[in-house]
Amino acid sequence: MHLAVAEADPAPLEAAREILRRTFGHAEFRGRQAEVISEVLAGRSALAVLPTGGGKSVCYQIPALLRPGLGLVVSPLIALMADQVAALQQSGVAAARLDSNVDPTTKAETWRRIEAGELDLLYVSPEGLMSGWMLERLRRTPLSIIAIDEAHCVSQWGHDFRPEYRMLGRLAELFPTVPRLAVTATADARTREDIRAELHLAGAAEFVASFARPELILSAERKRGGKEKRVVELVTARPRRSGVVYAGSREGTERLAESLRAAGVPALAYHAGLERSARDARLEQFLEADAAVMVATIAFGMGVDKPDVRFVIHADPPASIEAYWQEIGRAGRDGDPAEGITLYGAADMAWALRRIAERDVDEQVKQVQVRKVRQLYALLDGVGCRAAAVRRYFGEDGVEPCGQCDLCQGKVETTDATEAAQKALSAAHRLGGRVGRGRLVDHLLGKTKDVTEHEASLSTFGIGGELTAAEWRDLAEQLLFEGLLREDPNDGRPLVGVGDAEAVRAVFRGERRIAMRRRIDAAAPAGRTRRRKGETAAALPIHDRSLFEALRTWRASVAKAQHVPPYVIFQDRTLAEIAAARPGTRAALVRLNGVGESKLARYGEAVLEVVRGFEG
Ligand code: ADP
Ligand code: ZN
Image 1 (cartoon, rainbow, N blue to C red):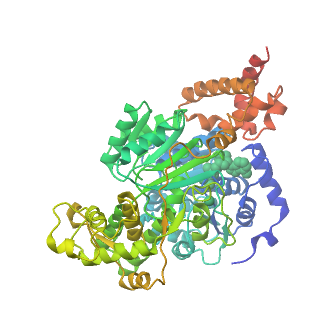
Image 2: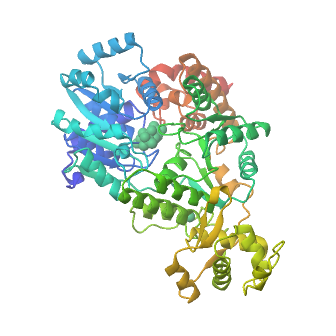
Image 3: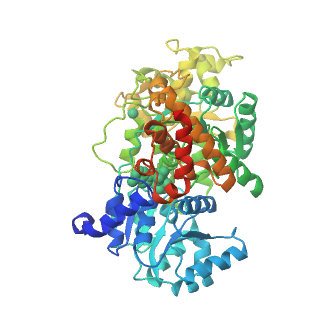
């Protein structure tokens, strides 16, 4: 690894900035974009880890436009490719994709353009690319860059392993002179190592941006029965907002979508069990809607780039912190405040651990996965800033609390419950792992129905008068998260027993203190007024707001005519800038963020027309 910044030659970077302005309409590079681009422009390979919404795409798009030859982008999802290509074409970039969805005529035309050197960017799937003939044809084509998007898919330490990504390692020897850029939004140190090894990027410079997403307001709450009811409550408290609700099962998504529709929310279900055409139609409906709620399994998401998603709710918890950050990260991509809300329970953790135990993989891989699950639940059920916990997990140092998550906002209080925990643990011990959580609580309170003489004679029977039943249930849940109690699934009628013996002894000796979380009663969205204020459109004064709405109406008709999602034409943020600035000339318009030359040429007159319509 070497220091890329010091070596950067300013001249190519100036040219890159020019393209950023003229083609993409952005005034300045963000985060580590300039460094990554300089590195690639110097002809060297690199690994870039930038958060979702951090602007990974221009890191390879700009070098592809500046360097001679065709820029190749390997991307795992066809939906993602289609959107990116549509957005690039809007910006006047010669881009195309080759995937199994493209019809033969278009394919032939694309190859003609490739061979004539007319194309700047080509998007391909990993399996498509590595199929013999495509590689053969591309080997005769000069390439400017090979970008490998979602590069964490190559790692089995990551959370999204795709075996076909492993084949991409061969690109290093097939195209030894072409700089390769691996980009991803989530990769802990180990996954980064794996990316380097598998993709043969040993000497490549590494650019890891901060994982901070200050626009995201995080919260999590334990499930308390009635999960669906809770989700409906959370969603209906956020009316006219686009959101994603993740659920663990296909049936779960259908059921939840149904309940939401019954509550008047425009909700759609999405999962891998649906017909392809139904999935595509629902995706399109979601992308094009001003406000829609997608209730989905994790089949939905990677590469879904709807900028104005205002909340992501996990009705069931994600699989790891990486998955958490990536899934929550689909909210607020336009940089405006958005919420990530997670519902979780000890039963979810037990289920995740059991699935790992049943998996047919190396013991070593299992250990890593178990650790990832434990880290996730430690974060969800923890008492310190959630955003800071995520960033530390990804290896950031000196992280400050975010000040806006539920834990920073102090909605969780803790009290010392070491003594109560000792009682619960010894009750579980005396009951010998033969009862469920409900009966354990009854036992502590001395309220067990049809209690046997033996049970009533135990020293722990009825010793728990200091807590209510609900508090005991909370404490039991917490002890499960901490591994002090353990639950045997027992075919759906789980039984509680004592967990890790060493840790339990430490509690009995008083060496390990138990800080019990008090019940959180999170109802309405947190910090609502502040969040509203931050939103692009709501920040506008009322008279600008009606222009903004008029611009949106205009955009909707243009998008519809072209069969592209509206944000491909202009993002909300850009429309809000136009509404506030009311440009009277093309020169004034092109100065606004998100208006590049191609968009100016295409839509400048129409936009100015809408603005003029508002003056009179
Ligand atoms: P991701 O890293 O998630 O792939 P994208 O490349 O899709 O992110 O970019 C996210 C958003 O940020 C897009 O709307 C893009 O137009 C915008 N963007 C990218 N670079 C800049 C920049 N330098 N200044 C302003 N906006 C930018
Ligand atoms: Zn916080």
